[in-house]
Length: 455
Image (cartoon, rainbow, N blue to C red):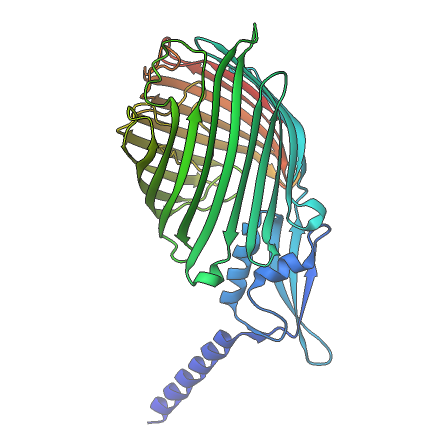
C-alpha cells in the first residue's frame, strides 16, 4: 500500500513538473544583445511574444526560426537571468551579419560582367538596396549584347505593418532601350488566417540591338498583374500547397529577324491564367551552400486562356512540371545532392515552365524552355576547412539536360552532358564575402564549355 502511495505521489510530482515546464517563464523584460546594425523593433516583431508574456521552450524555438528567416543574423540564442528584485529577464542574442557587399561577376561563357554594390540591411531596417552595372553578350546566330544599370529596393513587412513591397528598375545603356519596373505587394498572413496573399504588377520594355553594327534585332514589351495565395510557411512542415491566378499581356513588335521560326508569339496577346502546385518534403539549410539531410518532391500545373490577340496564337496553354530534390549529409564535411526536373507544354516556344532549384544554379550554356525539357544534376560538396573566419569548399557536378525549342538555330535541342568542378573560398560570418572559380567541360556537340569567376 505504501509503495502504491509513493508511486502515485511520484507520478503527480512528475506531472506537475511537466505542466510547470510547459507553462514557461514570464519574460518581465526582454533585452536585445549582439546587434550592431539591426534595429531592436525588427527583432521584437518576430519573437511572437512581448514583455510580460509567459514564454515556453516551444515559443523560443519558433522565435529562433523566425529570426533566422530574416537572413540577417549568423547566430541566435536565448538566455534567462533572474534579477535581484525577483523579476526575470530574457536576453536575445542576435549576432548581425555584415551585409554590405560588392557585386562582382565575370562569366567567361557569355562575356557577362557585373559591377556594383548592395546592402541587405540598409541602416539596420532590413531594407534591401542594390545598384549595379551589367553587361551580357549572348552567342547564337546573332550577337546580342545588353548593357544596363539595375537598381532594386525591397521593404519588409516589419516596416510596413504587415505589408511587403519590392521594386526593380532596369535602364538600358549604349543604345539598348531597356526599361523594366516590377512592383509587388504582400499582405500579412494574420489578415487572412492561414493564407498569404500577394499582389504583383510589372511593366517592361526591351529593345535589343546587334553588338557589331547596331541594327535593331527585337522589340518586346509586356505587362502583368497577378494575385496569388499560398498557405503560410509554417502551416505544415511537409505539405505546402500553392494557388495563383491573374492576367498578363505581352507584345512583340518588329523584331528585324527574318524567318526565325517565332510564329505564334508575334503581335499583342493577353491571357487569363490559373496556376497551382504542391511541394511535399523539407530541405533544411545548414549554411550558405550546405543543406542538412532532406528531400522534397513537387508538381506544378498552369492553364492560360487567351482573352485577346492573334488568332494564330494558342487559345489555351497548358504547362506541367514535376521534380525532386534530395540532400544527404554523409559527414560534417561531405554532402551529396541531386536535382531532377521535367516539364511539358502544348506551346512550342514556352518560357514559363518553372524550374525548381534551391541552389539557383542553372545549367551553364543551355537555355531551358520550350515544349519539353528535362534536367538532371548530381553534386558532391566537400568542406576542407570551416571556421568562423574562413571556409574552403570544393564542389563537383554532373549535368544532363535537354531544351525543347529549336528556332533557326537560336537554341539547340540536343541533350547536353557536362561535368564541372569548382572551389569556394568564403567567410561564414560574412556570407556575401566569397570567391569561387568554376570550370565545366561539355561533350562535343551537346553543350558548352564554361568558366566563371565571382566575388
